[in-house]
Image 1 (cartoon, one colour):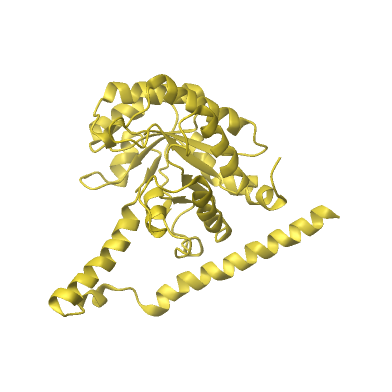
Image 2: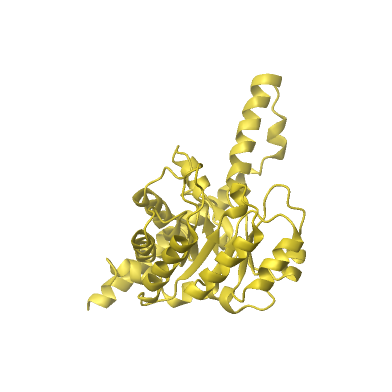
Length: 302
């Protein structure tokens, strides 16, 4: 059962259906917008993307914390505010699930669904630099527990399982494929090998599994969306790229003012009225979503 009717309404099937084409799509590539801020611009009203995704690093930065140092409560509170601001389905990067055990992974799935998320990703990165990747058996057990929790939900929820080998200097393609195949067998909906940088490797990963594969657009990657689609990729994300770009632009502007005493950065800034339109759209949409939820709860109570 949900903790509230609000959560049940938020995760209705019409909302999650946008994400579920990832399980069935044969030719379409989907790339959700990655958000790290509670009050990010309202891309939904502009038709930019059919779904949204959070970035764990961007979220942590917005809270003044390092990635991996945010509690489950703070992370889900952050996600709840994003869900409340948009009618689009939102999938969250929930890192390792805020614990090492299979039980913690399952609890994170239930908690994520309860606040209105349409999906989330769980990774096999331990959070420890000296031993960055979970043992194979434990990694699979964690996904099995997450899948069991997802199957107990009364609605759709897209579980993305991530193998982090390539992000942590473990460029072991055989082990990466072995893990993704095991995650697929366990019941994950989408498979994600972070850090792949060349099309040949990406194509081999896509050919090794039958579930949709997510690839990260990242520094040093020279492939295009069209090339990724041809290689078999079904979903593209950019991790913390947009958050780092936004914060980096701010820092570089500050450096220019301090060092050069000039303001050329403002030449590249978006116009005030255009940018304001994004944010005021978010406010209007948030108020409408809240009003719809109140009305639905009133009707349900009759």
